[in-house]
Length: 188
Image (cartoon, rainbow, N blue to C red; front, side, top):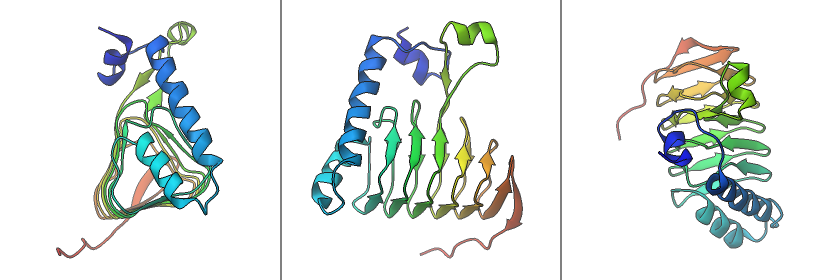
């Protein structure tokens, strides 16, 4: 099994030459995007379309933004990311439609083992993050590996999401916990 296959399976893996090359390509595209003036909208959109695995027609991602691989991130329609966000998309990172992300948020599919000897061997793991539609993340939110966030959710500023958040919820804190239920959205 290759290191990339181990990564995709959620097993411990090590960044080998193949993964290092993919990381480098992605960082170069992030650099290019972050240094392209906002007025060059079409160029910025083209870079992001090359970078991301999938994206809707209507998206706006502010600089500075960082991805690990890019191709593991899929975003729906009406996707907005404010400044200084990080997407460690080592594993699949999926966002639905109408998702709004405030400044300095982080989505981390990557992690490191608790065992110090495994960390010394440069082993890592990655678990997917899934975000539904109609979700708003307040400033500075961090979402950790393996989390699923349902539709129609608000995550309060500064929260650290370590567990799944059910649909129609407001969650805040460290660790984030549901403090309020929301009315389900009407069906269109």
